[in-house]
Length: 464
Image 1 (spheres, rainbow, N blue to C red):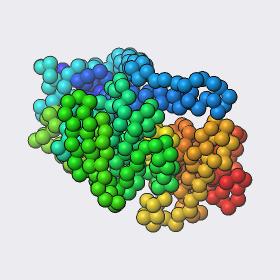
Image 2 (tube, helix red, strand yellow; image 1 turned 120 degrees about the horizontal axis):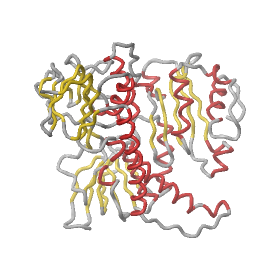
Image 3 (tube, rainbow, N blue to C red; image 1 turned 90 degrees about the horizontal axis):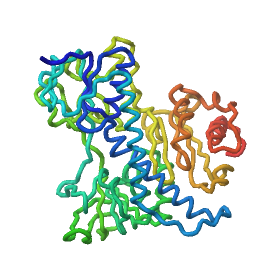
Image 4 (cartoon, rainbow, N blue to C red; image 1 turned 60 degrees about the vertical axis):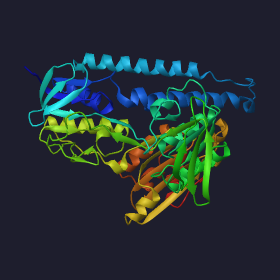
């Protein structure tokens, strides 16, 4: 006999565990099936471990530059093995906390892999042989790193994002294929800890989707730090050397002609693919498009009573977006009013050095949509706090409709990801520059740049 639940969730990553926690908080009887430890890619192979190692890189930069502040800390050295141990301690602590939360809300967590037997009946079989039925089924099976055709991950020479986060020795020379968010984070990390990095991006600039003014700051910073950045570059082939420690040649074509990079490791960072195979979706009545589960704005699939959230749907692959989608799904299951996620206004954070954070439309997107656009940029080179902390490389840009609301906020520089919240609120509440211009920001702070930029949009300003 299949055990009956109100909600069964396939997958224990951010989308899955958020649905389980939020549903249980509303009094639903919830089961969640997870093949590994709860937390998913973000907690174990993505956001959290990557940021833990990027924090190591920040500490190393800080110590190396301490003499500028009158602090002679000598020549710092890195023990990457010790950094990995600390990273794992962070992951384990957060995982235990999540497990306690789930237990406290009486979510039934079932180890194993779930397969849909009958989507119409929300009937699922677990790999241990047990069977579950539910009034609602939520698919949150996540994603996995994409590879390039003919270049399979081997964990030694050709590395996925999973593999990079397990490195215990700093590679001498690295090629990073893909200059998106993950590729730039890896390029920044490895450059800071001592690798010679070649970064190869097929599109005309790094961080496609980021406002051009913001991404240009990152590209200039990378080049100053010795990263060899190649944009509009198409990889034509990779020749792997024999054995562990062999030299590998990455051949690529640019506007300047054919080039090559000889490296010790090749990191492929060209996005992630949804995990929809092997869970019983095929032939179930649940529609797929390019392997993504098709959903409406309430996260409902084409099969009544079946929902999907997180990386398995074609929305921004961000943990906090998965959280929001899970909440929408649970509201819908409960028959409550659910506000769909406004995907073009979600906050983004990229943790390379310098950091990038943004929400809303880029200047190019706003113009393409027909808005009468005005913009203002404040550069951190004139911000007292940025100069005090020794990081004047960055900017804050506001994109606004003329005599209308703010359309986008884009930040590159120190603590950008922590500074975005005010911009996110302003964009989502459709605030105007006039609404914000009279608000007082403490001085000296990085955050006052937002107020100054909004003030400048009104036609009068102080420092901008």
